[in-house]
Image (cartoon, rainbow, N blue to C red; front, side):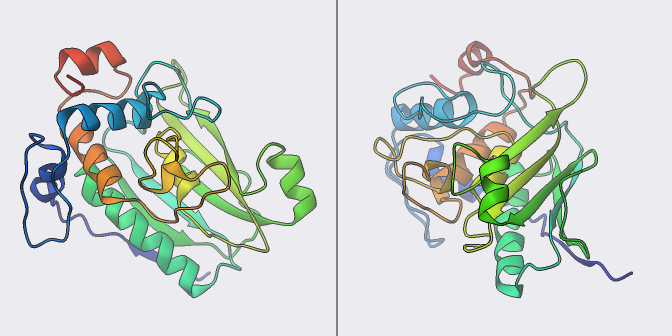
Length: 245
């Protein structure tokens, strides 16, 4: 059996990422990141991404798992991100590139590995697996009745729905893997209101489409995952730790 695999780079660029969200003042470097993000803006983005609250949140759309707690994989997890056999080389490379960014941003908290399966039906993921399923319109209506663009169904570890066990995402055959949005949910992120803060794939909602993670999303992810606070923490605990002052 041949399985195409790619283990994403674990090079940590935490310093470069946190420049965007570090102190809120004006700063710049040669990485191409855009600095000059206020502490208030940072706080709003983190609350929207991790709790689905605040003015940047998209109240009509979803957060995975437990409302009011930070949801993600347990520390130290190796997460397989599996694409189906019919995935094009371009779509496969797209997923590899985006999950590589996540590996950098989470800085070793967990690790993702992108795998191309020989199967098309990936609707029964195992523990620590996130799968893509590319399906026809009739199947989309079954699995994603409220979203023509895509959706994800997730399971959680016993003892609390803030520790992710696995997830299966669905995308329409006429578009393929056109964004990384559902994998954002797959690692625990919430939707962001595209009218309030149209930055990154988690702001893909209401007809808009942003295929990739943005610098501001990756900076927020890095800021939280390198803070020392634990998955399952509440918004009040983020506040107490100074993550959302």
